[in-house]
Image 1 (cartoon, rainbow, N blue to C red):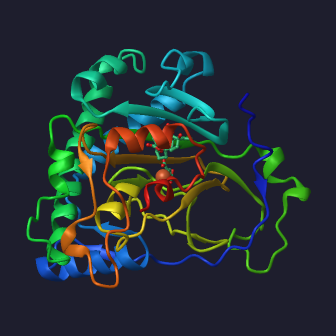
Image 2: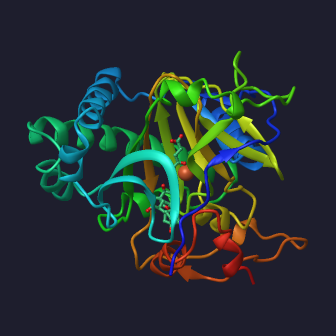
Length: 339
Ligand SMILES: C=C1C[C@]23C[C@@]1(O)CC[C@H]2[C@@]12CC[C@H](O)[C@@](C)(C(=O)O1)[C@H]2[C@@H]3C(=O)O
Ligand SMILES: O=C(O)CCC(=O)C(=O)O
Ligand SMILES: [Fe+2]
């Protein structure tokens, strides 16, 4: 029997907020590709500015998302359960993980979005157009970033990564996460105070509650946009969590497990999590670019060196996905595919 996680209240050492590398997509191409490669090697994460996703597309989706999450629980449950697509609350995946989050998960196929929207909105075409418009725009950014990565690593076939998420059979998914603000009684609960001097939690030094527990993303890359509320943290060294400064104008890009394997470990799929630590609700929208199920994933031979031969065995995305979905959120599943 699967047992739910214990209480998500945690007291841990936090490093003060860091500024991730900020990459301006409007800069000169070879410089952008050099900076992206460096960020993916050093952090596995970066922020993208001047990304070209129109503000009205982002605003429309934010508005539609808040409209949905503002509905009554009974109304929202009509869009669930998330098995795997649809509405979910607190339960994440199928293996007992829980967090202070509610979410909508979609397959990025336009037809599937139209059908699902009927259970989500009173104006399904308005909702589905907002989701489709955003996904289309963000996928283009994803393809561009993947091409820039290949160029920056001197991989001759520069579409080797982007081809996988452009494929008509790509298995990409899209997620809207809503982290409700803490109820006032929890916000003021003295026993939840974090007295650690290194706490970066703001003036009240409240202990944090886990919204979305620590994990790496299984896919190729993730593009995440959030409102102006803090919550995302990344694990740079073992046991040290670093809060990411929220910036609604930028997109936060991170390397997924598949890209770590394809780059033979040169890029890192970094563990991250989202906390609920605010009096304001947090909304994040995450595009997870994934290959077709039958696609064969293997490290790029150009990235082998005499000191670093192939680290991972070849596998299909279907094989990897099956392993990921059969394990807990925090599992380091890519290790199962090491040679
Ligand atoms: C516990 C789980 C939730 C998850 C599937 C998994 O079994 C392990 C990976 C989890 C994750 C993390 C990134 C994405 O948010 C996600 C949609 C994904 O592809 O892998 C989630 C899965 C989920 O919430 O269903
Ligand atoms: O909401 C966030 O900032 C992070 C969510 C996340 O990591 C995920 O959905 O995989
Ligand atoms: Fe994630």
